[in-house]
Image (cartoon, rainbow, N blue to C red; front, side):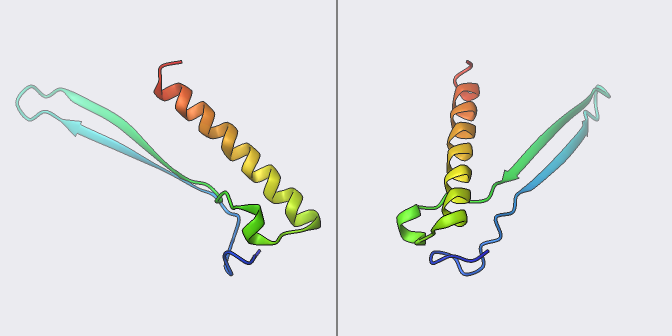
Length: 80
């Protein structure tokens, strides 16, 4: 769904999980890890998009949920 900021806005998300396996050649110890990369539909400045009606409501909900997610990530980063 395009808008005045981005002609090709898709409002889509992407989650990519990369699993990493390693083995110490000397001790034979195995280690595993996982890296999660997440790309969320972007937050947009509403005044720049000139959105109205249903599109405005959708953008407001997206921005609110991204803000809440940012708060959660910040809290986790601070050990809370």
